[in-house]
Image (cartoon, rainbow, N blue to C red; front, side):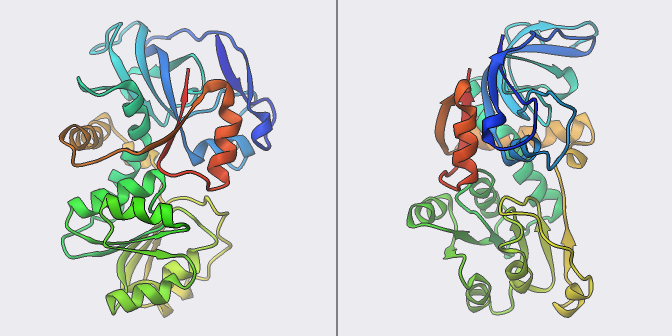
Length: 319
């Protein structure tokens, strides 16, 4: 089969489109013909070696497609089912093997492309708004990169939970996307902390920051006393070490660095989050913006576009 293989970490050029042995499902696993793979910043971190993996590897943590075969002891999944998955490596390929416990049934009427576009980032936005910090009616929420894949979902879900949402973006086009997603106010990054305080008076209850180093200090300055800084990514670079006394000076602030896996600790938790996300998409309460689709062979270009912040919403690789 054809796949993207990383044999040495580095820039987008290390994403090699090549022949690769077709995987076979072990007991408890499912073999899937991949229709689409989502492109996420976690894939960039793996490619760069920021989160080291054994080499060589097939990248990609999210995808959707059709079940081609099932291993022994698999229940509830059949050949021909349309399924999606997240947080399992190997999606940048024509075929992928996924543990049956991680497979999600795609609802009737939802395409595999749409499922691949919303699963990982939807699960992320869900745990951030429902578990890391439980957004409540009347909360003031700041969402950085509000026109990005996670950002657009965070804006919409926070609004569903009754919050006032302030977003940050870098261009007029991205501002329009964030406003259409439901953001109440949209700011540029320059001086955003002062603007947030002008809008809210006392600051926001929570900041969702997937940018990292460029926005970190301003994010802390945007919080009200006892507010929570949720640093869930570092698209702009890793944050330098922080003196905990900074949190005291800001008014007994909270700082957390969450990741997806601990919030999908059980099958029940995964199913709960996925049911909410797929249900909101089916009802039209959650809209998914797919900005670009690339052939699998052009994975390197997809990474270049993502890292250059030239994109909005979701990027997909099509097999």
